[in-house]
Amino acid sequence: MEVKIIQIGNSVGFIIPKLILKVFGWKVGDKVTVKYNSTDGSVLYRKK
View 1 (cartoon, rainbow, N blue to C red):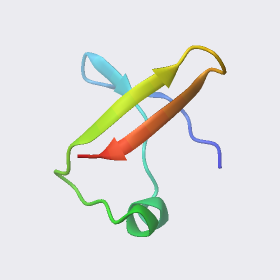
View 2 (view 1 turned 90 degrees about the horizontal axis):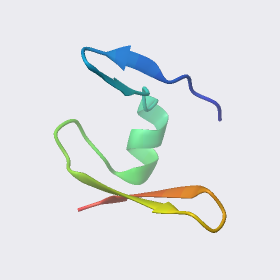
View 3 (view 1 turned 135 degrees about the vertical axis):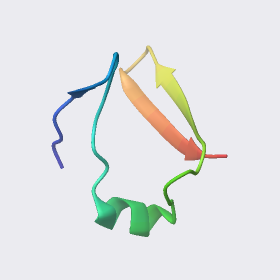
């Protein structure tokens, strides 16, 4: 899946499709931790 980075006020972000939210069991307002792996360039998102 490919998404586009967009401007959101003074920040940037991307839209998470509803299907992905449903699959992950996430909802609006949930907190998510973000970890970057510099070895392979991957990003891990995990619900707190």
